[in-house]
Amino acid sequence: MHITRRIGASPRERGSLGNNSCPDIFELDDGRFAVIGTEMTAELDPRLPPDASRADYERIVVITRDTLLRAKKDIPDL
Image 1: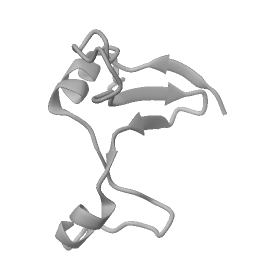
Image 2 (image 1 turned 90 degrees about the horizontal axis):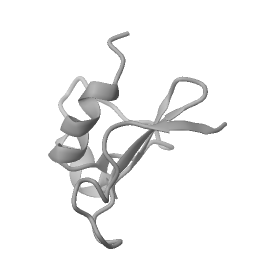
Image 3 (image 1 turned 30 degrees about the horizontal axis):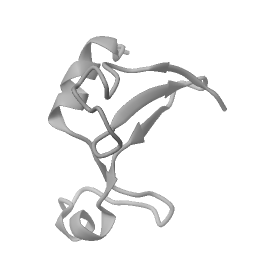
Image 4 (image 1 turned 90 degrees about the vertical axis):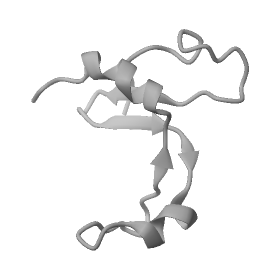
């Protein structure tokens, strides 16, 4: 598995000059996406809506709104 490209602006382009706020989104060579964010599974798992679930090996990761909005232009429609 390899990272093929960044989706959206880099943390530096979004104003992160240090290691304090570096959420990021990458496309993998198999078409999946990898996300760097704040792990918040314990806090958000009990608040998931009734029709949502999470496997034991999955984690809930939070990224900033700015990170996702700047990535929108790079996310394919299909």
